[in-house]
Image 1 (cartoon, one colour):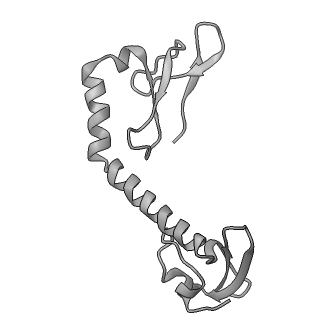
Image 2 (cartoon, helix red, strand yellow):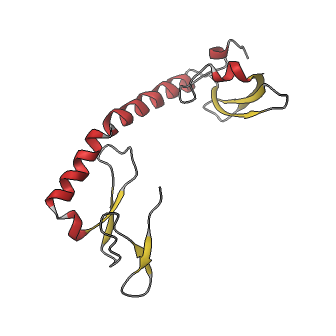
Image 3 (cartoon, one colour):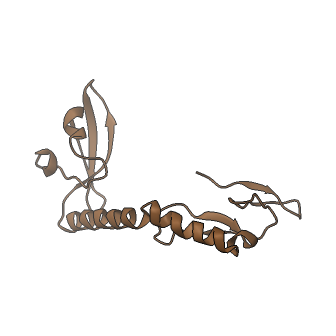
Length: 141
């Protein structure tokens, strides 16, 4: 989701508060404490309201931001370990060139790429966010 902008007191477009819609120019982006979800844009008046601040804190706890950030960090560490070992890791895929097949690109730490074509069903057997190598799909270089 994006941010809203409105005309401020000087006539220039400024960031609007996500809570009250204020466009006075004193709106700041406040990031998720876990670095997971998009920062909220909030004006000083709303930010200093204890109820709003508590709601903001509670949201990140109930939305699972901490767990999601931890999982992403662990996934990135697995990818880095594979790249450090010299493996080529899946970086993109596109349907075709033949019906039921897809072209998959794998990249190593140096940026070299290898492309291969495999059945779409085989490609989809490995979750999209999970780091995958050619060996994951039973292929060799």
